[in-house]
Amino acid sequence: MQAIASRFRLQGTVVSIEPYGSGHINLTYLVCTDAPHRYILQRVNRHIFRNVPALMENIFAVTTHLARKDPDPRHVLTLVLTAEGAPYVMDAEGEYWRVYEFINGGICLNRAETADEFYQSAVAFGHFQTQLADFPAHTLHETIARFHDTPARFTALHAAVDADAAGRRGDVAAELAFALAREAEAGALMALLRAGELPLRVTHNDTKLNNVILDENDRTPLCVIDLDTVMPGLVAHDFGDSIRFGATTAAEDEADLSKVHFSLPLYQTYVRGFLGACGERLTPKERETLPLGAKLITLENGVRFLTDYLDGDHYYPVHRPEHNLHRCRTQFKLVSDMEASWAAMNAAIPR
Ligand code: ADP
Ligand code: GN1
Ligand code: MG
Image (cartoon, rainbow, N blue to C red; front, top):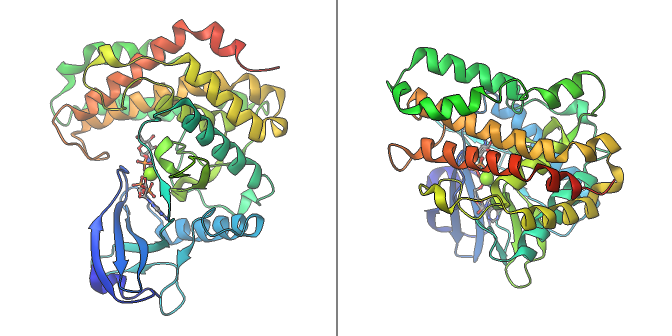
């Protein structure tokens, strides 16, 4: 790994490379040099992102655009180039590596400790949406096809049930029944998109709380990170993914469902922060469908975790045999809580 790191234009000599962060997809390392200077080194998951050069082109273009809007180096990811001027290297095994400047004085949270932290993450993602409003969307590559096409995620679930590759179908009758009872409504946002009632915008598509860096002192937003899935998409999905991960009383993989509750106050807090930062750009239909985005993206994530459980845990890393099933259950619990809070979720969106 030292050899990989040294192919990038780093300040100083590498003194340590340690695993870092808690993302599910890429392998992330913190690199320290004697300059002293810190970097993030990542091996991009090429099994999930099938065209890494195209993905890196997206990130290069998006970060360049963002840096033009706000040149503060702590407010945008900065790619470090190789000696030859490339934004990534490919190693002998065909793995792709990239390096970012480390954002100093920041913190990435897996859970908001205070409502204000969640509010600040909403401001960050809303502001991100605004900053990319004039980015030429047609120049972006689709890094994962049909990423938030919820009906397509159900199709994959059906295939996983039929194949039953890990012999786990018998364990998931209740979860499967829960998902299938909602399959008919799962396509509602995609139908509005097809009908021209919702616009495609440049969206982040993975707006978890731990994909934003807050200032470690005052917890104001520094930088939106994890740009691998920046693609044309629906604002409702960006809003919704933040809600499913953050407007809850428990972690995504909490095994004890009695601890998992949708938090209406945190939802209302996020609405304020997000709409305050990008609300005036949204169409009435976009605003109206934000609650649906929250419910459907939560359902979609539950379906994805269930599919991976049935497949034998090939997509998400697991630390226990039922890890993906536990994740699926938290998502479905949140979906039922949202259904119970449906009127209040809608009432919280200003018209
Ligand atoms: P994944 O796709 O696996 O989630 P991320 O790009 O989100 O990968 O990175 C994983 C973690 O690494 C983040 O949650 C964050 O803690 C940390 N991280 C990533 N980039 C930076 C950066 N430029 N500066 C500081 N920390 C970073
Ligand atoms: C993955 O990369 P990370 O950990 O931020 C996944 C998201 C899921 C999320 C669930 C490319 O996000 O779609 O919602 O896990 N990213 C990809 O925690 O599949
Ligand atoms: Mg991440």
